[in-house]
Length: 115
Length: 116
Image (cartoon, rainbow over all chains, first blue to last red):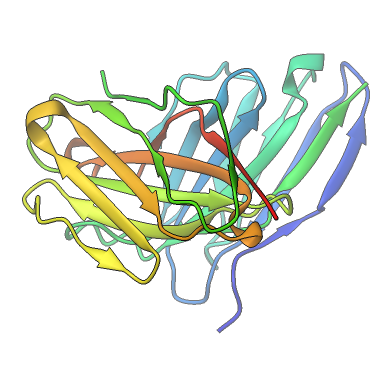
């Protein structure tokens, strides 16, 4: 079974630009969660999508948004990039059925550098 | 609000030493799960162990063992006979029932360096 894939793996942008990151979950998984990892703040939850609906949201500004498609693939978008958005963005997928814990499987991440 | 604290930022040991990584958590939920993840330099988070709030039985799995104590809100992780390949950042995490277990709250991580 293929794992979680994220594209691109590396990205360099300049301040003020916008960026879109993509995550393809494990086949059959309907939940996709996004996390931001920075040296200062560590790993922080951004949002979770389940069946094309945002189910949970972390404490991030509105510049961070996401969506999920009918095939469960998810994209996250960051508009008006700031230097502080430089981070490793990780996505995780799970079945998301909510009956107890559903194990999350993480992708390799997208490393975004904002210059 | 939920919180996970890993007080040790970096630990250095020599191969074959045992090492314990500390984790203290805060939650108002009565039902939750605790985890340990490993992040090697490649960046991908690797799941190691999971424990739910109803099961305080401590176990050993290969070279890994954990000590879960609800009375002190601690979930410590021990690697026995450490190896160079164990060098990585280790994260403790919490998932609560009130979020449908769909979010993970991570500690800041402990970098483990195992030298030959």
